[in-house]
Length: 252
Image (cartoon, rainbow, N blue to C red; front, side):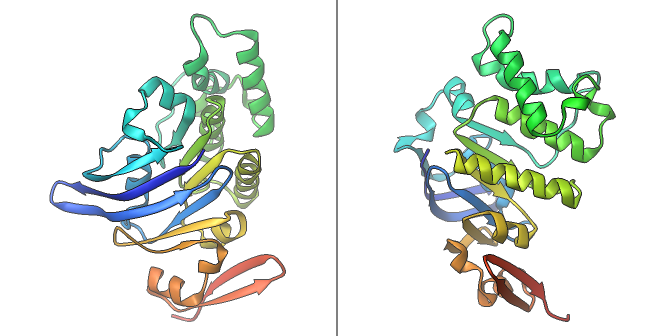
């Protein structure tokens, strides 16, 4: 699905967190929202998911105003994973992921629902943990459970706030490869991410935020030293090897 953000702004009381933000994301894109802490990345995702109500501007999904979509319909279109989430004590991994099927279940879960959840657990290498209670898992394992639960909604749009922050390098790669595969299957994936090298490697588009405003956006051509140095206030060297981009800070 195509998302269009039109000149939106948002304030926490007197503090303006987002200022005149505009960008577009097409079906199958994987967009990385990058910037320093406090630049507005998480706030932007919450505005796109209607957790926060924008002060001005508009957001459209396939040319339809986001404000006109019912909560029930939005839960079938869009899934959101926050940066931190408290695991429900006593709930198994399987049942946690099954909660993602709620928009489609009336009464008891069907055989299709149960099979769908089992396939997701296998895909995210969680099948051995299926009957464990989620609060006994590591933070990285819990994050993969929350991703599986979001995918259980069968969303056309997937919003993730720092999805690899608590994962080791192996599972960071697994999750990023999975998200890129989902985008190739037609899901619009939007993530906030601190690891700019992971963003450059896996995401075909980038949105750079600085103090609540967009100063650069587009394809991988935005990964130039001038942009990155302005974004993070440090000197960097951008190295391109084959199809990969590597951003390395210079000596501080």
